[in-house]
Image (cartoon, rainbow, N blue to C red; front, side, top):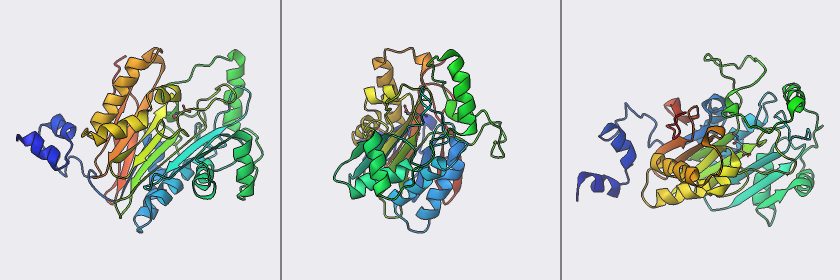
Length: 342
Ligand code: SD4
């Protein structure tokens, strides 16, 4: 048996080894293998969302509670372009929200195309825990929310979403913007040093102190989508998948493409078959590129994944996708490697 086989046997990631030609030292990757651990898509939102999740994890809280609380930070941010009721609307001017959650017991809950409910991730969790179903959509999801005590919000667009929608109406072209999650038209005190804004669509994965995995994903979907359009985020296996024996994955970007390749499920299956999180995300992006009828220049996909040992990884279609990883050592920004050089 050669060195690589031996390392695989002990569950170490061959791709991480391959990149630097030797086992990653703690110095190079201080957060790899740590537990508890939480990671989420788009670093500019990880800064606050991961902290909310971490505050639960560090006090011996459950991963499922951590990911719910974490992504709620983005849902509650009225300036977020891509998550929650402050986000961009569909082409008829309605904000419609999608969310999913999955715990370590293969329990799942999801809502899609839900309107005027502030926390779709909490509603998804209630679908998981308080309904006989795994997914509710539209009017029915809203009715369930009201039964569960959610207030019915006004349905008014936020100021920045109204401005973006009015601008969009001038041409009414559906051209999703690559890496829109990193931008926002309104300068705010939360603007980062690099000029980026603290606003994103969010998928989050966590391992708690007990070694259990959970994940959550919440979004307003693609801005100016057709009315009734649902993306990957609420679809278990596409935007999110968790297998407590193996690992978890979540996606951001153009959901149609992620659905086409069952992205998150595919990544977890690749990890089950021995691939590292980095490798699994890369293979999924390559598979997606083989399948998509669209010009890769017009789309962006970002995957993040973590295995049972706490090794994490990512890959994206285009440059620009990053994520944040938080452990007791703090939060680290990681740029994803990408497939398409433009
Ligand atoms: C969707 N995947 O609805 C979502 C959008 C997204 O970052 O993740 N944007 O297709």
